[in-house]
Image (cartoon, rainbow, N blue to C red; front, side):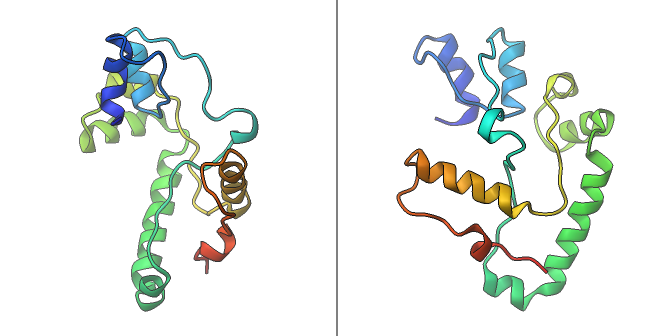
Length: 145
C-alpha cells in the first residue's frame, strides 16, 4: 500500500494498524491516529533507513560524480543534522509536507559515512525474519573509497 494511503486505510477501518516512516507518521498523528510503537528501537536502534545506490561499474567509471555527490551530501548532512529550523524550511520547499508537519517529525540522524556494520545488522535481521531467503554480504555490495 502506498504510504499516503495508509492513514486513510486505518481511518476507514480497512486495516487495524500500519507501519510508517516520517513524515507520514507525523501526518497520521496530526490526523488523530496514535503511534503504538517506535520503528527504530531495540535491535533496529540507530539503523540506517536510506542510502544512495549505483552500480559498481558506474561508480568506477565516474569517480568525479561519486565524489561530488558524497561531498554535497556531507555538506547537507552537516547543515541539517539536529537543525529542525533548517529542516522545516527545506522540506516544504522540495516536498508537499508542510512546515507544521515538519515541526512534529522525529528528526532522523544524518550520517555522512556508511555504517557498514549497522547495514549488515539490518540485512541479517531480514534473513532472520525471512524477508530474504539468503544472506546478503553488505561489505561486498558497498562502495567505499
